[in-house]
Every structure is written in C-alpha cells, then in structure tokens.
Length: 312
Image (cartoon, rainbow, N blue to C red; front, side, top):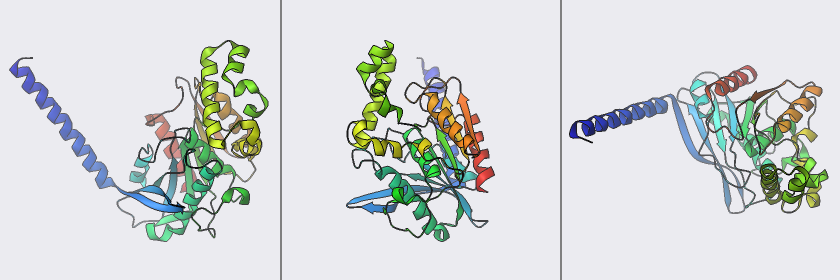
C-alpha cells in the first residue's frame, strides 16, 4: 500500500470511529443504563438485573419489559439485551440474570423470573414504573421463561419465595417469545426424542440425531438427570400444559428451518393459546434457523407495536 492509500485508509478508519462515538453518545443521551441491581439473594449468590431507562421520566409511569437471555439455561448473560432501545421510546427494560443449570435445577429458573417481576413492582415508585403493565420477552431458553411467566401467573406451586416481595403479583400482561421450547413432554414418551442413537436408527438422519442429543443434554442438565425420572418437572416446564383463558396476549417468532427447537414447538403453543381464546400470533421467519441475535428491523417493529398495544 502506498503512502496516499495508507493515509486514505487511516482517514476512513478515523471517520468510522468518529461516527461510532457520535452514535454511542446519542444513544447515551436518549437512555440511561443502571447495571447490576440485586433483585434477590440465594445463599451467597446475588441475582441481578440491568435497567435501561429513558433519560426523561417526568411523564406517565413507564411500562416495563423484562428480557431473558438465551443459552440453554447453561450459559449466557444479561449483558446482551437486543430490546434495550425500547427505553428510547418510553419503556423501562429490565435485562435479567437467573440461575443457570450448573447453579440450580428447575424450577429455580422460573422462581427467579417471578422474583424479578415482583421486585420491579416493589420498586415501581422508586423508578417511576407502571406496575400494572409489565411484559416479558426472551429467546430460546429465555423465551421459555418468558412464556412460563405468561401462562403461570400467580400459580402458588411455581411462585417460590426467592427475593421475597411476596405481597406483589408475578403476573405479566404481554409476552414475546423467540424460538421457544414450549412442550417437552414428547421427550418423555418417545425415546427417539431424547436419544442420539434412537433418533439415528429411527430416521437415518445424522443431523437430526445430533440436535436431538443437544436438546436432551441441555434438558438433562436443567432437570438434574434423565427426563423420565423427572417427569413432573418436565411437564411443569412445558408452557402448553399451563395455558388457560386468563393468559396475556402472546407474540411468537420462530424460524422455519430451526433444527434445535423445531417450528412445531411454536405452533403448538400458539394453537393451545388460540383454543383457550387467548390473543396470540405466530410469525414464521422463513429463512431463519435457531436464534435471531440482534432483532431484524421487521421483528423489532412487530415487537415494539405489540408492546405499545398491550402495555400502554
């Protein structure tokens, strides 16, 4: 590269850096981030959430949306929150950490999620929240928790006592779920749905068998052993088993080509909700596999419109 080209490349890099810094400064001017608020303690473990808030909070109380991260309940964290920019549009967004399967077995994760909802209501006056309008959103394992929040509102056997604030409800008023595992019961009745070799011998499809193994491994870690030995917990973790007529509206996204959490999972929950008379919509993303990462613009627009409709 000659000197002229080097200077041109350096100038371009500096210009891009400047644009990035300007965009970041603008984002910081439009919303505030409060990191690491402790919403519960379990023994020596602190459970935390991050709050993304509008800078100006002198208007009506803020509707709240909780974000639950993906990672098979084995990994991941609250640091990546793809819906954080809802804070620039008058929402409070709480990105929540919950106990992973290496720290505690199910139902610890849904008990943590409910504790976070109760904490938000308990601190509504402090942070100018609208305690009557709280939504939940999550992807994959996080979507499983968001969906369970939606269909198990105030169920005593899943409430737990994590974090206290038991005088407050853990019910949410709207749910958005992305590529959500909603029905694990087939893994109880069909060995081919929890065994690599049974799936391979049944289908002859190595790829399907590989993803069957991955699903079964994650669930075995979550429940603490072979699924048939924890059948009650498996049913408890399946959102479709809890659907009732008083559930909140749901918006579901699922990739047509998802090999890890097949589309039938999203279809099953949407069908159960519809049969119960609950407002629900499933958007099938034709080209997607498992996981969306940063929301595509169309998905963000649908999510924003859904929460505006049901939390305002």
